[in-house]
Image (cartoon, rainbow, N blue to C red; front, side, top):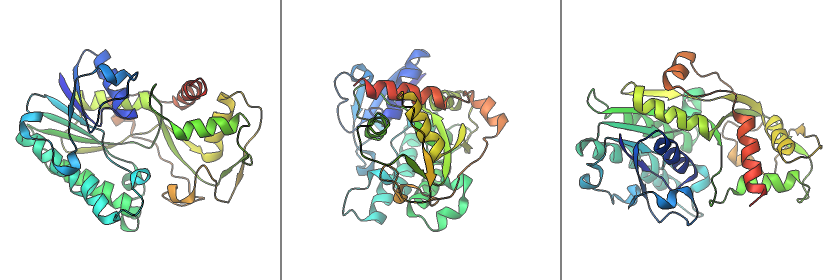
Length: 301
């Protein structure tokens, strides 16, 4: 299959490219800028453009059988002093469905959009949180273009654990430094938790959606429900620390309340549908291995 990965020079897009290439697909990346030297993506053919500015044309997309859209922005990407409504309109609410419509006009047969889990697990958040609302509308707007001949699916994953050589993984670099005693931060985690999933599991789900996804369907995918304390402890263990993390109902400098979408103290837990997991063919119970892999990568950087 000839596949275009939008956002292909990012962590998730880069892993998806490597995974799909290993399966024998013909992969091209779409990105705003050249992949960093030394990354696995640097040697993959790339077309350049910014979907939020309408820079892609039908002729750019027409050569491809399928598209993986991995370029959606989240709350970490809002520039300082940006108009939040305008940002979400360009990057999610309007930008994503408009790109999907362009792919449809170009004759692309399949498109997998990578969304986010919040609006499927806690639908009420879309009424109060602009980010969750934007993800929900992008998801629904993309799938509104689905037909029998244009197979559009959305994968809504949780917090993804992964890193890629040559791309900064600041979150994990900082967590690893803390675990190694290089940062003066008390050994605690904020109350609450969420579902986590390895980037490998996500890549397997992407491949499964390209093969078996039912047009117009949003799949809630995920792996392990963990408290933030449990997750931080995994990082400490992987870094070789013998210190133990405790849970406190207070804000944490490495996981501020602004990044805990449901609110501190809430545990966003769920189990993905077993039939959908089998259909998409992704592995479970892979988070600890992924944490160990990431800590080893950033610790040796």
